[in-house]
Image (cartoon, rainbow, N blue to C red; front, side, top):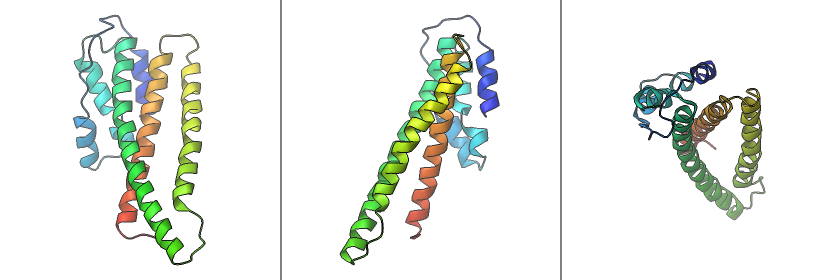
Length: 168
């Protein structure tokens, strides 16, 4: 998927830079529901957006479509994070009532997420900087944010499913 995002960035052409995006997450969701891997699905809706939107192959158009899918994944990440956090807080409280002195899972999750965010931002800043002052730097950074946020959202969703199935 990362190679795809870079290839898309190389296709910068002229067009209507301020066009509204035709983004919808439906294709990404259908891809995942069909059993395809995240690597095959993340970015699918952004690519369709670029093709369907007037000016979608411009730097601004690509940035808008990558950003729209990034925002979609960020929403999923935040929902999954809140659900996992609620589960961990409840488990922490139950263990504390029983006198268990295990480390707080809620604190561990929060610390992990707080460490992940600057790491993601630095990694995607590097992707941007690889383009120097070129016009592909914005789409490259947004494609990276989209991909890394999607990966994290899917990991948290998998963790939530695992916890709901009765895992410790």
